[in-house]
Image (cartoon, rainbow over all chains, first blue to last red; front, top):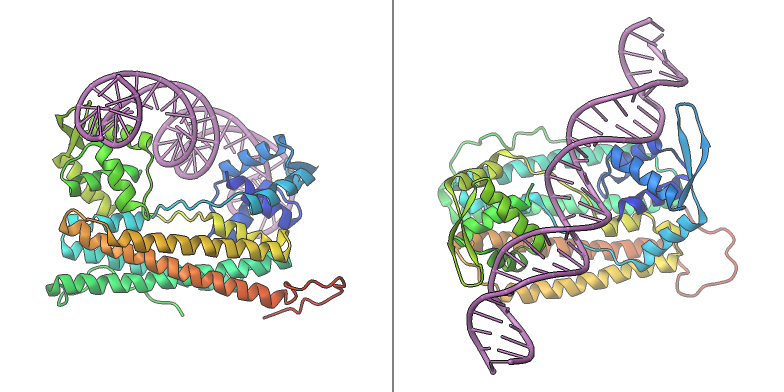
Length: 192
Length: 192
DNA sequence: CAGTGCATGTAATGAGTTACATGATTTA
DNA sequence: TAAATCATGTAACTCATTACATGCACTG
């Protein structure tokens, strides 16, 4: 039940917004942290309203509803922040595949890891771009958002290094892989 | 649809097993990578059977069914490994809370981060214990499992360091966190 | 023969995804 | 006035969690 609190929190920070605004804010500021689809968000906003945690402050042009967090909503957010222990859901599709790479040939396995590394390089570039043109609304969101952004950078760097290490380990295990023309990975124009 | 492939992959590596065996194997070897509940697994095994990717090789004592992966199942696993691009689902309850820590007092915020760091230390200890007494069945699972284990260690170490850095940043922002003074007019030196 | 572990299943509920549907307003 | 954007919603489906239910077989 965290999408609920993600929405609640963002609404507090934004000091009121429509579902549409919120959705964009999700994409911009929280891509690294939490994902939400449009239909999920609209549904949750209605449930939050029904539960009295938010309310429609005003209605605008195209059926637009401007939501505002109620006192009960703020209390709920605070409660969730401090009293509900966050749980780790560990589900990583790349790691899962890694587990079973023994089922394909060493070349194919190495190719897989190289592809993942290349994809990560691309995402690292995107993060760099993103970093420039974020306009964090308020000061708190800016401060804590920056900490989360730093996390993202560290995470990707760690992961990139680990991919490199994995390739070394694989090469050591299967030494003839070394002389081999590069397949389709690792010729991504690297940014920055 | 990845639980399906996690089960399929493990079944291949284990060279046949019951749902019960599989469930334990999930817990032991893949805690860091993929989670499955009992009811989900049994359901998926039946679906895999219906789809012809596994079959009941023999039946044992207490209604026990020994499953075995079919050729179609191996092909499906291979296809998933190499042709289906893994997708990143980014959902981290701790990071999400961090985003909104501006909603509570600096003391409470710092307390939250410290708690998370402590919890991580505990898990790091557990990982160390685990590392000793894993008996990886076959050679492939052992090799790739070790790579995944190294990932886990690097991940936690990175995260631990980041928590430390976060606490420093918070202390720098709110220097009087330990001894609170009544008068708080306007400090908050803007940084960066 | 009682307790533990083995072994599988179902039902209810909630969370998340994809696709479709609809219409108002702004802007070029 | 056509296209783009704003804006919300619903339906169908899959995936995941929790709780409950049942019973056999071994072990002490």
